[in-house]
Image (cartoon, rainbow, N blue to C red; front, side, top):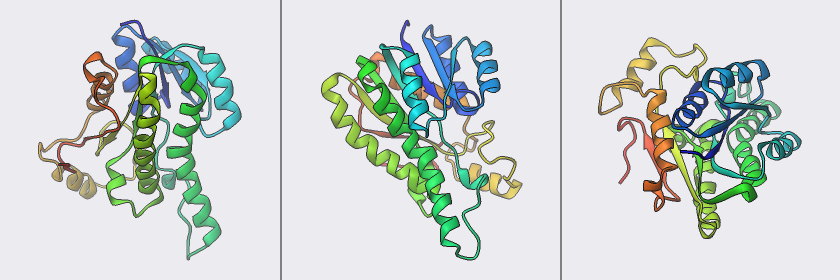
Length: 241
């Protein structure tokens, strides 16, 4: 393949796995992220081009879009994560703290995708793909993280209708528990881990390669009639019909 692929949040975790898969497939890959040293290290390791960018900052996203160039084929909005692990949701009903915590997750998981997609949409060539990364948590949206991912899925459904006439597809991949990503930031107990794996039908944790291969497929020629969908990759922990 010889496509130009942009992966936000590509410096580590699932973003790195997805970027590495496209790079291994022969594509030119651009990765973005806030941690410049980690981004540069990952880019060197997997053969990608790094652009330091906070995907929630409109000015930085605009600059990044200019540096990425006028021609793109695939956009993977991977930047995000549960900011509640970094910024607690608020104590004792402090509404200001709660509002700030909710805005942080909405910015990280929804606004980042909206800003990046809007900034590069004119650069995406016909036959291209927009892939957003949701979460099984969107099915149980009692937290700001779940609500943000649910909003991302709803926005993507509308985006698909908007970009379809341009020859583009837009889909969501929603992982379940995926090992080796650092998502839980060392807060996952053995009991919780057992419950997450026990909820699957195949009795195993997800792996970064599961998400990377799904993204690769959605960007392939064989997936051109798949758009506006939310693909759950969770071993059956959440089923759809």
